[in-house]
View (spheres, rainbow, N blue to C red):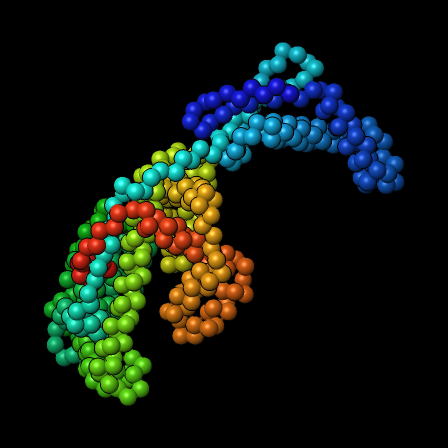
Length: 433
């Protein structure tokens, strides 16, 4: 069979296929005869249904199945001979043959790009260098204290940082709307869980007081019914509580796992935790830069069929995430355009990484996989159980293997690129403004 593959673009190809009518009719007849031996039809014994009845009942569907199988077989055989690396599934179209002896089709498909790995030698990446200061430990202690905050009843007007218990009722042009009414709701003034104008309006209120005020909702508010509209709220305040932070003393240190309550040991423990977090974040920063360097030095085009598939996967993940947060994903429109750039990034990077791993034999050794799993387990109370949990599942083990492979790529790339150390603060590294 002579192959005539037409180039329609960088990755798009078209291939003509022809199937003889004789082949279709012969295979259709064979399948109908086999069907007649097993089909049960009322009024006939099994295997005794006349062929003309089987043909009348199943002939069209069987012929379509035969044609579909024949087209796929011809396409696969042609691709096997051509050696083209097909990405995704082809799109078949009927062509006018001008001859009743065969049916002609065109198969349009994409191929994987040819990848010529670029030179990382001239690429420069920055490696963050962080020295932990006492002030970083103090900030961390403040965060931990706020996580263990308690409240006591206050006999004064509500202020910023107080926790209040309220009833509220909102209306738009005098009419109720979904989600606009609730009772005995706890709200910490200033934490941003409600709109800022709503929280600000509660400052200065006293226990037992009622207050009405207007709040204009943003145009981009996730609830369509109230986005950009003015809502009139009536609020009744029931309780005001003042936040009380725990003191940094021996009791507090014991709460953080220091048996003898030694405050200095507590601070050293926090320092070790911060050092682990720094190490993790620095590796993430280096990995991010390495991956971008690979994309910059090896420009390729991503097959659109793979990008579309990845867009669908990202959209499904986004819907699942919204639903896990208690939102109704169907009510929040998700455009494929929002995910296209990320999908292209992932597909291109995945193809480059696969080629790099193949060319440079960057295998994930058992000890690399074990290291990845052990590091992930450190953040849990029972690391050994987490390690066993990973090894008990081929899927979880495969995820760890993929991460180990990526780390191998990063290690390999860091030996090629130019590295410039850059001193940064802990807050800068963590993106804390």
